Length: 297
DNA sequence: GTCCAGGGAATCA
DNA sequence: TGATTCCATGGA
Image (cartoon, rainbow, N blue to C red; front, side, top):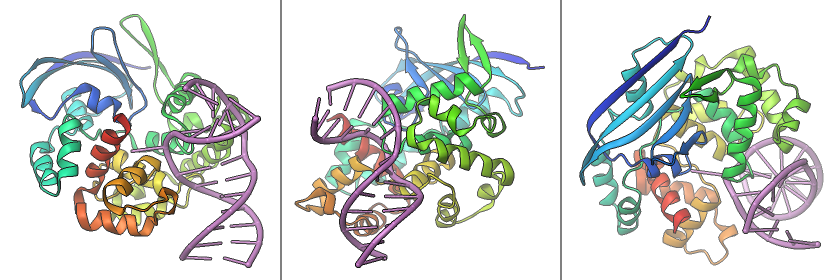
């Protein structure tokens, strides 16, 4: 029997928190803007509604309205704190990155309200397998279709929402089922990776210390290559010492730093070593500011 | 009709 | 190792 828990929550004096920057910078696929400028999203086991109460130029008050379904092993306040990474000092991070060069300073001036969300690791694995050679509106559509068919339903303010299915729930889908939901050639990747994770679980990934070791293990799954693995690590584990390279990052990095005439000829190894040297342990965040900045301008 | 999208696997040199 | 090609799908 599922239990329901509804609660609201006010978080005061929060810096670096802009709803559009956070939810539209490309890191998440299950948040939508409402007509009243709030955002509603479906996280691991609940629905969350967020609005800004009061805003100054450095910080703001956030109002969260939450409904959860199922077993909740921690206080809702802690769930929100964890999901938005509220313990992370973004003022410090932004200062550090802005000092690296003018490009980063500009991109941070544009997307200064970004926070990397701490999303569910399993959900990131499947979501970013879907993202391969795909566009964001369609990725969202596919994830919603999968959730509606295999995830649990819950209602919030008279509207229905569907949680992203657990590994066990999604393991009921065969390749044809997945294909019918619009996954295309990724059907087999989702199927095989789900079956594999059902067998071995994901505990080992939380025990690994080194980011490179985590990436190496992720690459064993079908449908996970370097870029997808890096996104899973960045958005599912919040390790910032990783640098996902997609077409946009390649483009902006080439324009700003590499200056290769033919963008397709940019060597990924050179790009990665450059990023590691220049951005260091904050590479993942630098990547997100640059990605958002370039994609929106 | 053609190109592109937060790429990856399979194949071949 | 490195470069090519194929892979579904839908919107521009």
